[in-house]
Length: 323
Image (cartoon, rainbow, N blue to C red; front, side, top):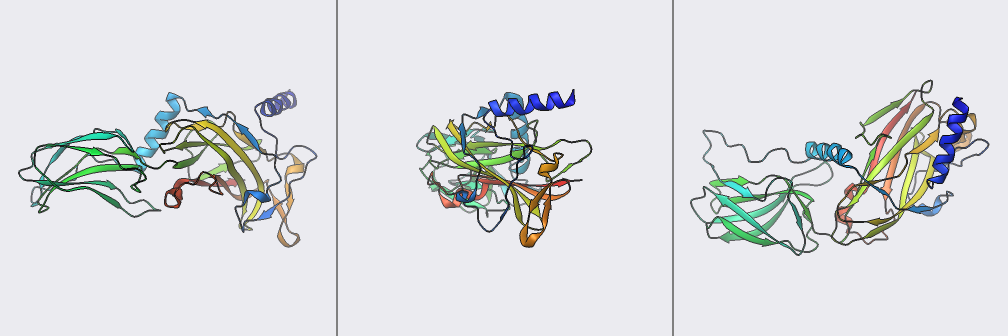
């Protein structure tokens, strides 16, 4: 019965546009991780329309993103601080700003003229960024800002309003800012579209597959976007050898929605034909147990001409352990 169910699952994957990378009787060559060039892969390219994330999936994704980015709404000001707070009431929480459009900035409780900045907090890959909206504007409580094209401010940001002498200050809620024509983002998730942990453990005795999916979106202003190359690799550690590699293509990605594969990628870890691969210097790569990196990279050759300075989130890497 289990064999019949497995066979049915494999047929379903085939109809969805996938090939089983470690099917019975097949072998898979390995490669050193000295390059990410997609020209080295022997897998058949597949191009299909991705599935837009559901409302439930979006809640999970947005909650994870919020935890990683901006959680405060106003800078903390102690009772002994000499800095007096300014209330920034616009933009509102999770507001979206796009290049070429105008948006109001509103504040209160300032007693003098102010300067306004758009700030993207520091991340592990990027330092804090500060875009000066205006060096000085009258304290009218409102200012209209037209978002510039191809500004390199990060997509997660907030507006800061300060007095010219720096003795009064306030910040808005976190907002999303899209200024680049193309700005791709990728995140690996588990098969149920749940934000995966850094180390994902798979137990050989109770799991048939190394199974995962990935989410992607374009935070740019040009739509629709077709990503002709998405490089997926499973890298055996510590040998640094590619045990599995394949290329996908995604078409018709609109706006800044999250999309994912129609079905998760499944690599058989219990079929004996998929256990061993010829590794470096005559060694074997055992997919039955050990440590692996699962890596997904969007547009590795930059065929979409994305600004190089926005590439920090084009690749997602997770650590996987098979026991």
